Length: 421
Image (cartoon, rainbow, N blue to C red; front, top):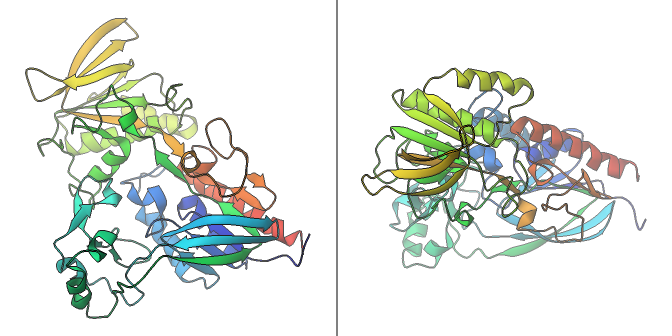
């Protein structure tokens, strides 16, 4: 070992597992740096309408975590940040972090004057591009940090100066540039989460071609009160409520050509979303097309409850193709009923693809050589001495499991530096 052991911890990823790891380590007395690539903390959970096991809105848990972070001076948060390099060894890592400009400083009060001053709009990243937002925007209603973001397209436009002058608090700084900082830490928790599998790769389902084919994460935003339709479940093509909705399970999952593994949460997510439809549109009909249903442990009761709804049909069969009807504005699903071996074509107003969870490391590898499994997950809690994985970058997990995983990673990160004093 070279030099004394550094007693600080770096957590990469500000979702549920990352926030949990950061909070637990800081409340145990350690200095923590929390790095997140988005302009806000909360990860995918912040984009949910409701989550298991209590089916409560995400802000219930997020608000508590945000408060714990705000009140703890040992946690330093960097948003719009990305780790570029890691050198050194357990107990003494040097980490280079790139900070992208927000163009808004700490003086921001979220008055919204900057948004009012511009006509430029961008696709809303929080709503998966389902609507548009001003190029000066608050990421979402409960964003942490609670501060606006200026998109580069606005900074480079003729409206930039007008927007700057609209701020009564001098919170807009158009001269901000990317900058690099170096952090010295003793251990690292890598909790960069997951991405929805790219549904455009499923060419037989027409995602991106037919507006009434959406994904499960898009359905979460549609059902949310702060979503693109203010919580109304509608057909994107018409803006009208659907009379029947199809959920296609394993859309790209358990498929050697796409994601060969099961993401474990998709069945329950579709059943949950089926309740969104039925509660809001009691005259609607929902079909869930599945290979087999995976609802283990205490979630079996939820599955049993859903099956009692006569408006929800579980259809055992793999959908082969989606195409537009020649006689209506509906979509036709070609599917084989595996119980009867009958090939059927069924019309639907709205189709929801239950796409799986792809680890972030499938697109963005760690900036240091480490081992991955066949699916690009980090295969173990201990990535290498001093570096620990947490959450969905390690395995598909639900929210409660991600929190537990974050705690476990924090304990290991602390032990790593305590054992080297």
